[in-house]
Image (cartoon, one colour):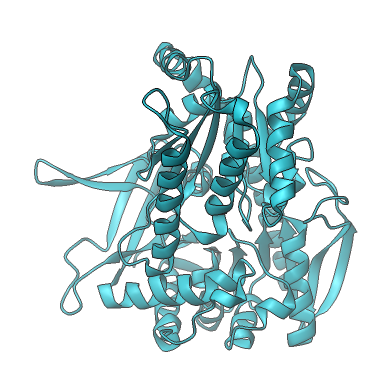
Length: 502
């Protein structure tokens, strides 16, 4: 009998990049050492017999044309990856349609973009059940099963049915909306019933935890069991997403569900180590030489209407119109990665970004200068941090974002001539960075004022603001997040053992 795992991570993405070399499949570490996948793999360094469950596309009929389980031995440790075979049709209905056209706009408080028509909820339910079964096949009866993100909302319910003694954790990488927005979803009770089957539900910031607690109480009759004042890296008041207190436990149908709010960090040591290399220093110098005496602004994200790229480009257009003395004196490097095939929800957003860049460059550019350099392909992490180091201003202006690690990476990469972070009030990281130039991307005046403030700021003020943010990035890094999560898991294990002993 195969030994069952005490620790299983369930996430839709595989924890590596797969390639074929000389006819053989190889598994490489992710190009970026930052982000959620490397952060989760860090847990394998202290866990034995750990398993990661993900999906991989397979033919619609017959056996999958790949090994279901692969053994990974990498810098993060040794672990198994179990690949759940899903057909192209299942993936499209589950991920491209239901997740992105129905759930995503509600999570980000865009109910006007909620698209109910093409949703196949039966398929979504079935895929979640398959993920749950795959996880339970690997898990010991009392295992800790850690499920990630909204597209696996229903998996905890099925896991609880199969493994009633398992400890189930769930982590949201997205915002969680207020009750009046969440309740737009026709499947709201089913989703909440599943989340309330967990032992602990995690979020990046207190606001999202409070939104979840509110909807669980109002819709499902849960009761707040404990609330505490907000501390740690958060601004408890004064910001658009601030909360003075946060609910840390709910009671529902005789069970206690812990709630956690703690934002994932970046890895400043990895950034520092890379930027200390001779090659990186040379690349930073090249970027600065290419820019010349211009001020470099950077914006990094992917095509998505919630990312605010359209609003940011319109603000840059107004800047050049309002302050003609800045023409040929500023350059915007905009990385806006095009969506994968099948992501029809983002086609209009991509067309609008490309239209705006073309219009701005056509309006103000000349043979010597194009105001905007646009990249619709992903830029390697090692190259991005060189741009962050060279930049004078970083624009992170989403209309809504769960956290946004770009803001933290920019702060971590800065050194010497301090740059300015212009940050949307509606990014989760805004409650960690009150020293950033906080802007409201829904207000043209606030966006314009924020850009002017960033470009006019004195060197002394830039350094003062940046050092406070850098200290926070160093203190609340990815290792701190991992340590915090492990403490919560240990407390969960201890309370479970105590209850069983009683």
